[in-house]
Image (cartoon, rainbow, N blue to C red; front, side, top):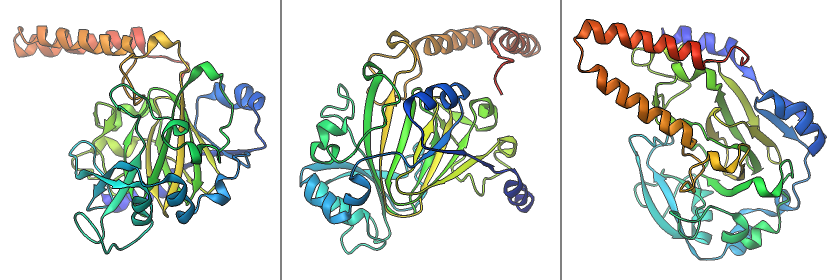
Length: 323
């Protein structure tokens, strides 16, 4: 079954479309309305692409402490939390993250590191590279594909070679700027959510290349979009598109998130950009209460009315306009 899946996977990979020479007008008129991920090549990102070497990053970023994920295995699992949090001076962290084997380590010489920059107070402040890493922020030119008042956050990321991040979705549109290193990105359409075995905003299927199809049989039906980002590439990830990344090399990137819905749609306490819109959260709470009410019925009746509810949701809420 697994061999058949792998062979089928090779045939069903959908390459993410690529564009060059894209300006704001072309992005907003030709690319953005399609609501699909695209790779943008050849954008002017400033001097970061040539300047952000390991030595330069460590000197420019300084020795202030940063909170990092440390994992003994390459595949990080945010549901089961197979990693630990530690702090290191930024300059020391950069050198460690660039290594394949470590002389100094927390768990093992093969451990992997991941930095996702945070605000000064993560409970109140968003990540903004211009605040947390002002020296580095001066080196990068952010594509201006959205209005300034839509800006939400700019997240600075560094990954050890080989590190794989769990499949998840974000509720805001974002640009993944791959400044250095190569990164493989696998994406799944929001319409394929029924096949991804969700736990909140994350998929339980950790290994998207060799999934346990006995445990996750529907996963084989999910359409797999894929791209390999080179240094200087920018990936547009529309809101709600699931994505899974593998750092093929030591990599540095910056995620730019912006509010494409009216501000009042978002949870005001959300500093990470991953809380569902407030209307969606209310709807889930109402559904949970309805399901609890069904528990008052005998099994045969509960099953019947649950199926009626599903049909009602499909009729009233599913869109026939989306692919």
